[in-house]
Length: 602
Image 1: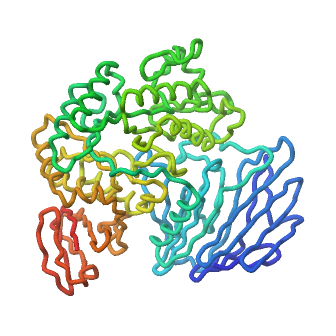
Image 2: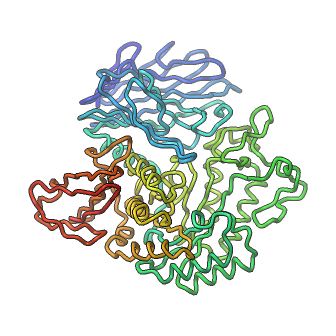
Image 3: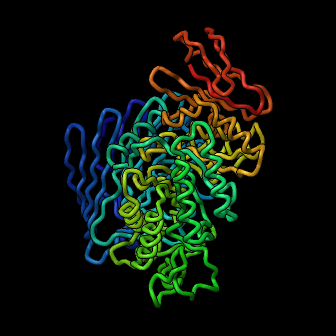
């Protein structure tokens, strides 16, 4: 890509895209400042342009550096003493020849069953962190690789505008984004051009991984059992221990985890210790749950002493209302998912979290599911004077967790959490709750269709949520196969007293070659040829000389899949769920009956 300059604007030219009239700027107080306006000095080399400008006492530096298929953009600013930079615009530009362009919009988090969406250029919309433009033979991603300070949105509104400092309904905010006093830098921004949107996303993901350290995992991907969908708030020691017995008897479940979800707090200290011992004695690994940044205490109990998850007073004289996050007028932030946000810059909140984490770690738990993490990323008036934005608060709080839940065998899975920043957990659930119906599998596959690139790049694992087998054989097969290709954390959530459900679990997890896909940790990519209503019906995974093709038919009529391009090596395709060998032919077609799915290995 190349950068061209005239007196007032910059043009970014690629092989397939041209961004013209590119500008940048900031908001400082109530005033807006344009880098290309006012007094400026421009430095140029063969592959970069750097604009230095000053206007109204505000100094800005805008740097654009070009590479073969990419452009890196950085914006920094300095304002007067006591002035606050409230937002930054590292790039705004028009696009040539956009009639056939579609956009892919990435959600900020995975709360409230939010989805990845596509739309026409005319329809536009906002993507969070990174977004994509694509047409038949061209694609471009626009994304930020730094999330230490700013929430970043990419607006497609007749042009592209990348804004650092957004706070809206989908970032779960009810008040303005915090600002930075004195000096500020925008997130480092990258544009990548590719022939396909899949390739463009992968280029962004690789660059993010290069710029940021993710938590790696040196053991097999976690598999086992989780209590939430099975028992929800009715979990107890007896049900947990029966799940331990059940999982320990399954084939292909070596070194499995058996995890408490929410409401483990109803168990006594003695019951928790005995449950941990029971799991260990059966050769299993105990896991636990925590929502460290939120509380569901009722409004009429806010004057009560602030207590930890075990019921102990955290600090004498401190009540719940003393530690809740508030807006700049002093009002407690509205509830999110029914919970109130704790101010995680308050030392008392940090003390509570650290106490509970140490208690669970000492108990012997090795896996922790962290839930409702977006509560710490909300904007507000923070207790700590050196923190002014939601992402600063989130990063600080998550680093405190990492300092305690440390050790190469201590697994961290993020549940309701922002996509960015990565590096805060080994796994992140790629969607909201997924239950047992076919529509739930379809919802999960939307997140895999447009978010497969998070796997092994932003996070070590995508987590396809707990696998539910209770709705029927067809529904269970959809959840089983969608779970196998989703990341590959693989946690069942089934009631052990339901005979039919247990039969399905035993039969499906007994399929050795399919279960081996978990340990292979293959990234399955969506096939462009089979995307309908923002969901791919075919996904491709590769492992050395083997190709795996997962196919889904959500209609009631048979559906034909062309897999001939994968059969050129003369190998015999095998449908792994039923173990059926298929005849290899030049025009190889795989036909799925209505409401069915399968995986072919070639």
